[in-house]
Length: 430
Image (cartoon, rainbow, N blue to C red; front, side, top):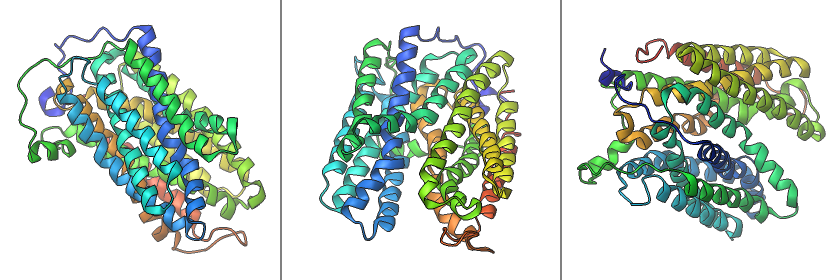
């Protein structure tokens, strides 16, 4: 099969020399802060803001706001990626979208912080998603733009580490002023603006080659959301694998608190302290696995075996956690899941970069499509979970959230197991 069909880069193509150390550090730090700007409100402060505006219907309102935001995020990332690929600014292809994206994200979060009603809050969160997704699309494109194949596992590990540590950074910022929700919403995006500005100063941004471009028609815009699986089957299988694995990861992130209450019997008064320990273990193992696996993947010049093993390890972690009845056993499962997430995110990102359709020509657009695979589960998992939770027994502990949480965790493991199998048909990388 030809590299054009698989989406793998031609072996004769010259490799980029790579980023210099200062630009590389700025790239990794800006990526961390960009993710913190969107994940911290999504995980913590947005829910608190919703409760301020609509205390009686907070749960339903939060679901509405999150769903609308997810839709705009899914639309925004590949769309702005496509526009970035077409940009001919003398300031580069990525810088304008980084700076414009972080500014729009800050404006959106300001609207969220000051919103007097739910509709205005929804508008502000939609603006936030569009802005930060434009920023993320441009930053992520730096990986295929300027990082050579032989280093993509290691750099992908650093980027994955940033995603894992993003909420930890955001939580640390919140503790500096716990009485101000406005601070909690705006501090992460302000830090992102500073680090993105520094990145733009030191980044030798890619400049468009000046070749002819098709008109920006409705069809051209629509193509931002599509890559032919028939022409690029390897990229399609990578996308499917990521979607399935992130279905499992999303189930873990969203429902592990309820699992601890219902299955393990953690008292509600202690859940915050227990969750802090769980997340510390999960993210710590994930970060270590990110760094080690990316380095080993580059040394071995292999991707598939790491990706498949990680997804299989995640399935095992879900099985251990899902069948646990004590906190120590649950923590063993969480440690396995953290390792699986760390390995998968690092090496799968490098593999997708190696298999991009059309190479660098549409790098940001196709990396945006790849990012969608990890955003869709934010919509799909909350739709599936109530159906699974409704099967069989209710809560084990009186007063805890009702539902069959062990079955939900085993379902998450099945998603990850099928995600491991989905990389087997890939031929463009080892």
